[in-house]
Image 1: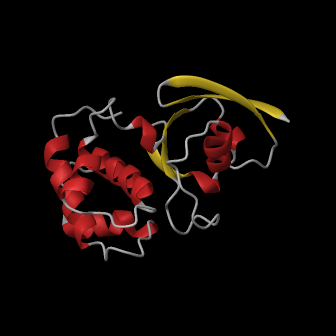
Image 2: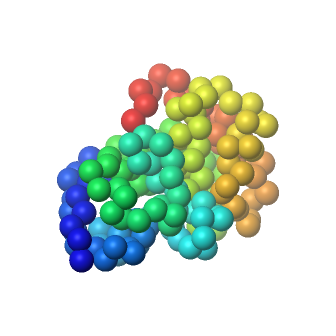
Length: 159
């Protein structure tokens, strides 16, 4: 067992992990932050996307030990109390979700996209979200949600 320490959603955390413990498992099982979903364990679906040091990462493709010392943001860290992040609001308002399983990863990926490109085109959004699979919506409303959020996020500083 090894000790891992990181900042998660603005709070310092630490824990003992086996060397082979995936970051997604550490987040869900040790920190009880279950908004990060695991759909495939092979980094194909994108349900486990989080931010590490401000960049989107599929947490099932990274060991917890690799995040030692990192600043981690999960879907639980986006909202400010009861105030949703603009991307979360846009997904709700534009009906960019159905079953909700892929939504945390989609939202986290989309926030990173807008941090890199404040005014993404439909094609750029679709390309950026290529690694996030949704089996319900067909992506049309997801793209609309990202476009809507991008407009309102222009006045919000990046993480």
